[in-house]
Length: 216
Image (cartoon, one colour):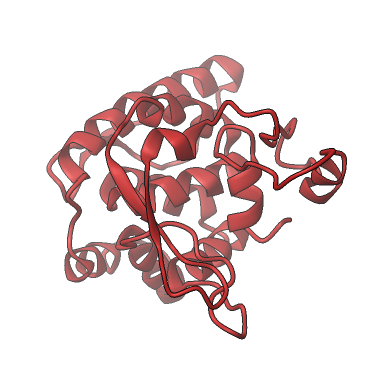
């Protein structure tokens, strides 16, 4: 395990895998949380798409993963799972889904968490919920009290987006809040048991990860 300097000038944890069992996993999760907090202070305004493309081009991954990592990191809004008449996902959501299914999923998502815009960081957390739950749990608290707003992409044919506080995307205390037990839980089955009304999704309970990753 080693420290590197991110494109925003903040230290981050390297994404090289290693063995070591539960204690090492907990240590990695704790460090991911610490460096996520530090990266937030440096990257809230966000690096440019060009800067991220230049940085990802140096990574030892295939070209498609490099491009998807830059696209996710440069996102200027979160969400967008079904846009327009055709209901196609936004470019960052499509990139997130490809990354999560690819050979460098963990490394790519952790890279975005350390180097990307805050919008990309939030979506990378959704990927980590499934790909690396320990890192997800270690990083999430750094975002849980943030009152800064991000733009949530419009869905369907609606032309309007909306701004929401980051902390409301992280966790919402609501009677209809989705609370999956883990990434293998069925979102559809859980929602079918909600008696009335629209389910309330957040990162903590797995609702947003399920929707953003297309597992709903």
